[in-house]
Amino acid sequence: MNSLEPKEQEQATNDPEYRLFLESEAFLCKEGYQLIAETQAKRMPMAFVPNLRQLPIEDREGNVVYHTVVAKAQAEDVIKACRKIGTTAKTFSYDR
Image (tube, rainbow, N blue to C red; front, top):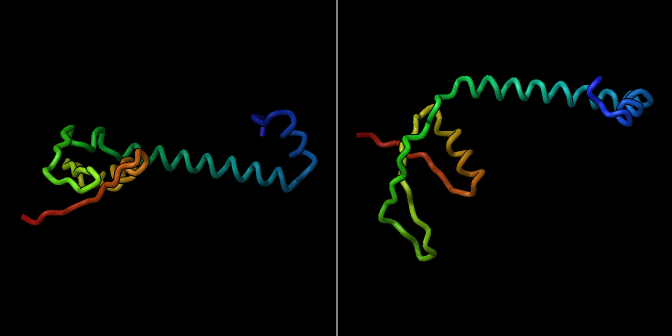
């Protein structure tokens, strides 16, 4: 609780519910950062094969399809990253 601003410190001293909220928030943030660090440690340094190939598929609106290869274990993380930048990504498994 030492990292609080003076106004928050005073409010936490006067209001036990607010203090509990701040302590819970700090704990959850710490746990969350710890979980993120553990997940990042398990990741491969580069999930993408640095090659995006545009396929000859295009719809009426000009949307195109790209093809790339990622490690199967990293596919969900890559899809989430693509969603964050506004790109739709899907996994496809080929049995050959």
